[in-house]
Length: 240
Image 1 (spheres, rainbow, N blue to C red):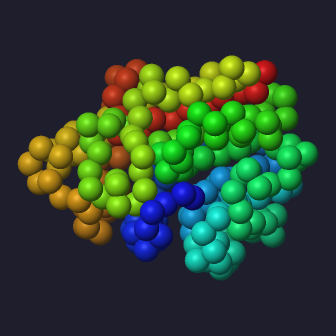
Image 2 (cartoon, rainbow, N blue to C red):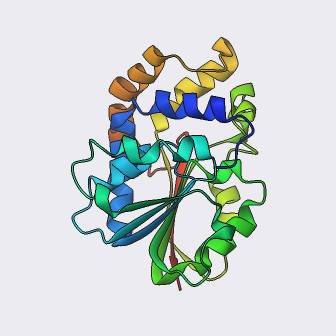
Image 3 (cartoon, rainbow, N blue to C red):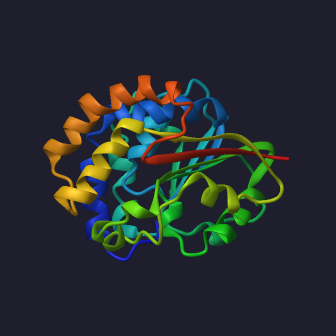
């Protein structure tokens, strides 16, 4: 994960680990596309790894790439409570560009990572080369540049995205499978914070309130709005 301040990112990852309803929401849409051999880029503290491997019935190999040694060293310990598949996880302290160019995967996933990468288009072009034909690229990013805050910048966000911005960096050899906003009700809270509270860092109470009360409403509201509003964007592409 490419960040300017790893202390910030570690704190952020630890705080958002409390958001189990949110994680279950987007994970339910992602898991069917993962396959049995997965490469996770920017694995952080292993929260996404723990979440997804515990939901997979068949997994042969899960590679975590995390170039920050301080974060990477915590991934394996974090999997001790995983209900299944922890033994299938391998942690590599490197960037994707440094990984074996001959390796091929059923899926590559970037969960809240692409916004940390300056040349996002080049990164996704490289990612597609690691996919088997028919494999899937999964990207989840924070939405809307107008919500950029000092906190975004402190943890190394180059940008936030709308659907068009994300679509514009999709490689030519990719077929769009899913492209939608998530958490429509959460967007209203983010707007309120931007306009009125102007708070740069969420508190634990705020994360729990959003997770326990806002996300369940968004899960019902999002499909009614045809996934046209939200504070995150989910993209899934298939390699042609």
